[in-house]
Image (cartoon, rainbow, N blue to C red; front, top):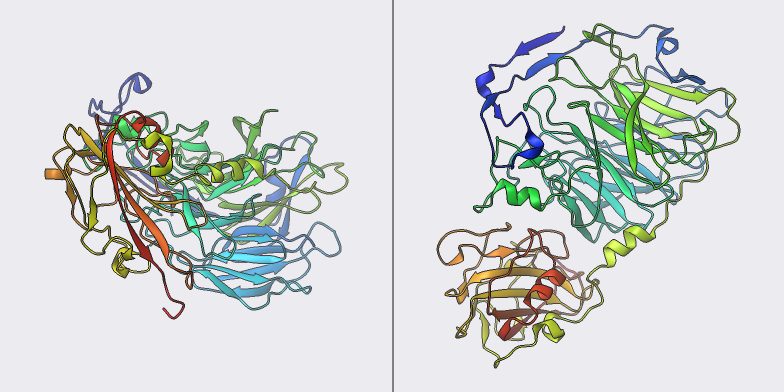
Length: 595
């Protein structure tokens, strides 16, 4: 049944008009009409595939049908196709052994897990995930899997966006999309609305990028190795807002959500915490490289490596657009092609396979969801509403798809920034004019053991600190580093603009960019090695000897003007030449194997 309801215009107010020229704080309170508009589902007939609209030289055909809730796709080196089914809570395997362009026989169920969604194949291993867990299992020669290993079991709550995805990057690291719990809100976990980067064994992970509302589809450009993703925009801002975003996803970058969107437009539904303005949030956010029609709902993303397909396919991305439910006219319901230029930059989005929506825009014959490149170079597209897999091929194509082998250097270079450097107090930027001052922690003595509640194995709350007043100090900065960790050093805390009259911090500070109220007013916190702001407690590998955590305090002759999410190197560069005095205390922490 088609549902269409026009919401009262008084529900939302959004700055319109010359939005690009206005600041994110502007809001002229013009009413915005939003729709709840679901298309009537229709069953595709036997000849439906032939009616799909494709570019000249291409054709669409059914590869497999009657499969249920077909979602994400992964293709093994032997050509086997693995499909996640959310409703059935499993992964199935299909093959086309005779090469006739259709799957042979019924699917085989490979594994069951409640809430199963994302999957990928790497180095003979099948990785798959639910909302909270990531698993790995070896692929057997018969296409089945061996013993399932749990790699991660503590991803944050999913809420509205429980369909999480993952992929292994060219740097041999696992990338995990963790969507927001809501349409737009201040998240309680800094791992929500992010792309995470984890070791293949799941033991180490960090936030690679944040402010990504729901980037289900992402991948690495075959030539450049750059990471690109398609982010789904905020709902209830109107028919044409927020547009879907195509982002170059780089380490430490923020992409606006939930407070700003597109080119810095302010989301009137929410305000940044801690007294920050939307303008400041926008200044710290990376704008999208390209945008597409609002509410199209981009899902899985696949770069084509070239070979076995159209002559100009290499380096372009294909994205399944599942389609809107709150836009009139509806958008999406197609397979889109993102054109990339010779430099590896996206230039435009084109419709590649359409016809899933009726021409009058009232009915739909499928919800495109997953897309993958088959071994022969053709594309496979899943319809999760009707359980159909469509194969899109190019007439006269020969050979097979080229290996998808993006260069690893871009990701590795980003990950290596700020590593293999001396501790802050050993660097020339912190050279001080005066004598050292005392720094003390309430919970441990100098060189003593840090209580477990301050570690990430415990409560993860920041410890209380005290230090001596320094005459003439305009502000204080704090850096906590572990030289024994893998990053050398691991940054556990960055803070600056601690007010001049403040010489003590209570335990359990908020993990946010700016603190407000009383003696903490205006104190800023920056990026840790984990990619989050605020205190990141000790988390050495279990069984390691105690790691040393250096609590370093700088007395500065001025406040620092740094961007939100500033790094340790940015803080030190700004502090250079302004350090009046400095102090330090060291705590130690180890986690026993028995815990």
